[in-house]
Length: 196
Image (tube, rainbow, N blue to C red; front, side, top):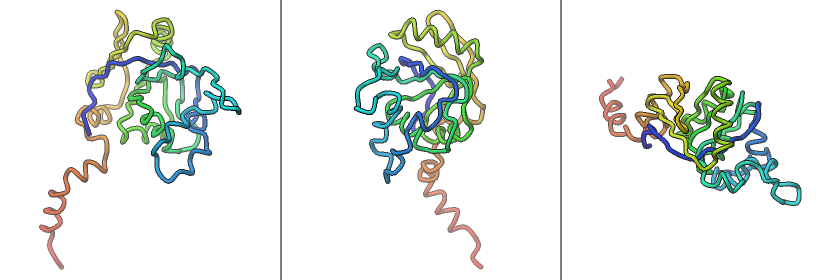
């Protein structure tokens, strides 16, 4: 795990409130036995018609090529509690989602993947979204360590619980990896336990 402190990248607006997990990754993609390649189903039904023809969805637009940040609305990731949704987003190359609010389960599933979910108040979010729509080739600078987002000549505060912020900044957001990194300490502790 690498610390996540500062990311400068292009953003892509996913306009709308209540973007649910079935829109993010349709249910038919949940039958795979691993997450390998799951990003191919990302927003599939919003991106393609029944014949597989492109619907020119936001993430496929030429001006958003290479984006690593999503900007969306209220209650992003609502619906069923599928871990596949943040997995598909992260595996597609996106590192940050900025929204007015997140589904609690989606937010929790995102943490251990290193998918940073930041919130903004409605007015700040609307201004940021408009900037990205008007200036798709200009990068945003997201400072996770100081919880700010800079764009153009503007810098705004973002919200993230302090304990989650520290996990990203310290690079300890994946609990399984933390255990593996401390395997020797765990074994030593186990050996030191009294035997009955």
